[in-house]
Amino acid sequence: MLRNGVSLLETIVVLVVVMLVATMAPILAPPSGAGKLARDVQALLLAARLDAIVGARPVAVLWRETENVFEVRSGDPLGTAQEACLGPTSHRLKVGRYGRTEVVRGLRNHVVWLPTGLGRSCTGGAVFNGTIELRGSRTRHRIIVSAGGRIRIEAGP
Image (cartoon, rainbow, N blue to C red; front, side):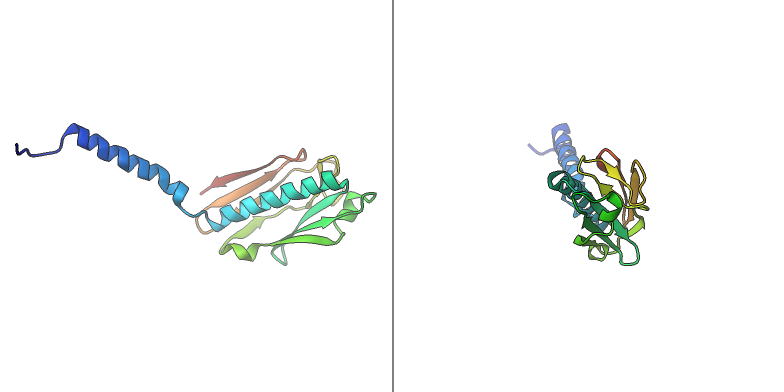
């Protein structure tokens, strides 16, 4: 039997397929440079905090604007938080590896993770809370660092 038009069932099937493809597109799209950098900075901060706890020594994460790099420096187990900011560099994360991504705002006073897992600033402040802002070609990301060790990423347009 010959018919003209499309049945309701065929229309529903096509709409379901279109919705599935539209839902999967953001997941399958490669992440932006800013998104990759945000995750890597978050991992760097968490690894430094873990190193401070396990190694029982202060560990500093510094933003070097002139060099466009994040640095991790370790202090002496009996040293102060300020001394950790001057200690030897153990790791460097170069922002230039992430394409057209820039750090709009870095950690102004840096962060030092103490062996207790709490954050302080390199200037000797009692409690550290800071935000790192990244801007890529498509998105902006904020990395919020709290004194208690919580580090989260907020993404936006």
